[in-house]
Image (cartoon, rainbow, N blue to C red; front, side, top):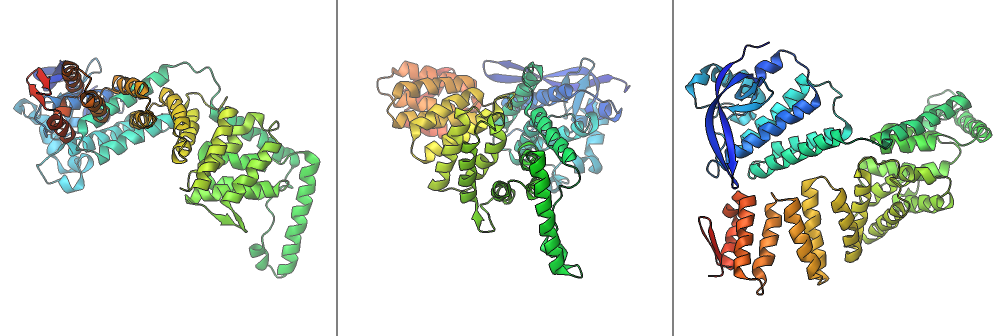
Length: 516
């Protein structure tokens, strides 16, 4: 084990919405030295490290001037103590000279500093966030097993990395959101799972499909194409052989029951977005070729990210054809509605036009009516996605109150704060247009309680308070004080300054007056 020693570190104390920095000493070793020992840790530990670091950087920013940056975030600048707590190194303290020398090495700077900044001494908050992202990647690579993250955890992890790499102007908000994202992941890991995961269901169906292929025997295989036959000595004979083989294969499949390839093709897309194997399986479908051909157009469109057409069949006609067929076999696919409908829902939102919005509406309403996600959804994620697409289609078709009904459900399911912020804003907009002002106030108050760090939601909240001539000015002042305590940087924003001038808001220390 690396010998622990005393380092000069920074500690922080929060009080009344402000943060105060305290110079202190901590016994431990740098995070780099800890990682070099090759110690594997649980992902919960890595989550906790990043949560602590994001919190301390946020506190550092809140106790400095508006543009204050820590300077150089890297594993040597983080001290890990015996109890697993992290502290930021005091990089201005000469006693930490040994670690400061390590930090200045060009080889290390190349890893944790933007290339254009390697030789520069100037630092901004965007550089701090870049270093934090690099620490996240470094600790995940060195301390965790390659497949430690679930798919959901990996999505959240990548989302946090993306925010760090692309942000800087609103670093405090990014860091607060990271803490909440990690808190959400930690709660997810603690929550008991009483449902079978969607992946396990898909694997079970895929296993049945594969068993069906085995029972059928090696006879079911993709027929030779004209291109392959053309390379033979007798191309016409090759084509005839391919047709004969396809006919014989179809007869074998009909004798042995349903062909498994259609569902295999859908599973490859729904479970893993594996377009290659999905299209390959659909090509091998011999019994329901028209059905599989229609799905093939859908999957090909999803792969390209735009509406496609194959053999004279366009995606719109393919979707309608599939929907009509699914209505006929509603009982047969009762437990597989999500498998059959999800690709249709995804392709319907690729195109921005009224006809596609109506298709999205038709598919979404059917999925909700049948609760298509039942047994496929362990955390509400799939239900949330379906309702979002339906809500957007309602909104674009001008059916705003129907959209609001969906948004009301989504806000109970959504875990991403940026998405939730937009949902609250849309609900306020819809209810205001419908002149349902009580609901506007209800949503406005709930929004700042659920997302107390959102500048946008607080600005909406204050605007509604101050613009109402019947609202007592003392209550408006109290609302302003509450907002600034929740988001101290709000007072420095351009939007707030405009509001301040518009409604004559005077801030004198802790004394706030409105309308004077």
